[in-house]
Amino acid sequence: MGDLAHPSKVRALAQAHDLRPSRHLGQNFLVDENIVRKIIAAAHLNGTETVVEVGPGFGALTQELLRAAGRVVAVERDPRLVQILRQELGSPPHLLLVEGDARWADWPRLLEEAHVLPPRQPGSGAGGVPEAGEPRAKVVANLPYAVTAPVLASLLESGVAWERGVIMVQREVAERLTAPPGSRVYGALTCLVTYHADAQIVARVPPTVFWPPPQVESAVVALTFRPYPGAEDVPREQLFTVIRLAFQQRRKSLRQALKTRGAPWSRDGVDHALAQAGLDPLSRAEDLGLDQFLRLTEALFAF
Image 1 (tube, rainbow, N blue to C red):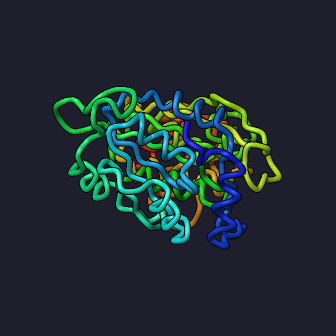
Image 2 (tube, helix red, strand yellow):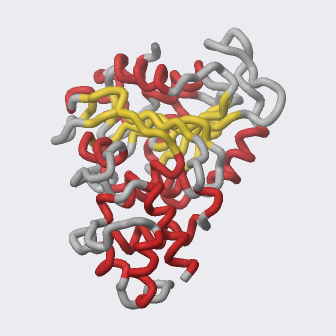
């Protein structure tokens, strides 16, 4: 395990570069080797994957990903940290370090660039070179609360066939991502994640593993990507239009929420669509699982 996960090393680097963690950017840097190990283990790496890392910070995770993955694409928004990463990590041939905002990243293009890189060589860490064919893509991220939803949406809606994801987020967000229907924290973001992957909290993370420590606890969420059964029969844009409008007025009944002016379906057909989908018109968005939203979408756009 390298020293970029040590608190003393991170503080020394910050002092040497006159870098103060930015609240605006939500900068709380991981400084705990045990959590690094848990994240690496949860990613199920075998040396053949291309791994995207969002927000590498000082490189605590990056240095271990370089040992365990075939290729690494690290996207960092802060130019000061990009400079430090280049200084500390050098120029390994299987690393693509990108200065940019993950919310607006062109993930397919970045992965195309990464696939041109030579893979990590045998003997430089666990695993070996990628197998024949296109390298598989995984994502690892330590996400600030303020950008969790847009970064997740950027990744999930990119069209990339992700295999697995491991993200560290505030515990409240982790509970939203894994919430069942009927929960008060279940919402549109939950549905977006469920559409793409099975989500599971794999570790609780105290504030003390970060520098500076945040005011809240965090959690590590593992995402196992797979097609959602039946989703191929419903246009994705239509489905998430229904979900978005339903949750915009989550305290209203579905009948009221779906009759919103400007909705791309007949207001007069809402009651019929709810009946066709077998749904109680007085139920609310938070009561519906993704299967029910799929049925409702088909019924609304068929009328």
